[in-house]
Length: 74
Image (spheres, rainbow, N blue to C red):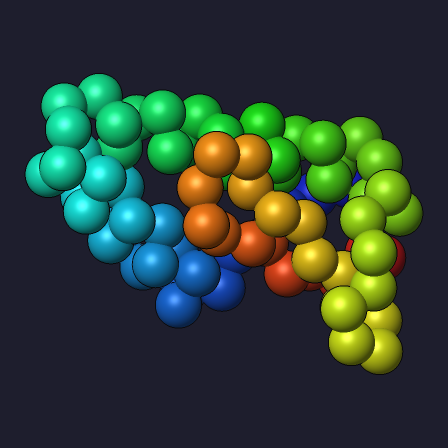
């Protein structure tokens, strides 16, 4: 399986998203993180499954939430 490295800006955005959803409804922040993790695991198992968004950068849309993960498949 491929390794995953998050840029600091992406880590910060994930933390902000978790906080924002948790403030709206208890447990929703955790569900957000679970959905992000499930998407990351799918990327790790099948890095070529998602479409190319620009040049060699691919885009995976997170289930249930308006977030995308942009990544390079190496």
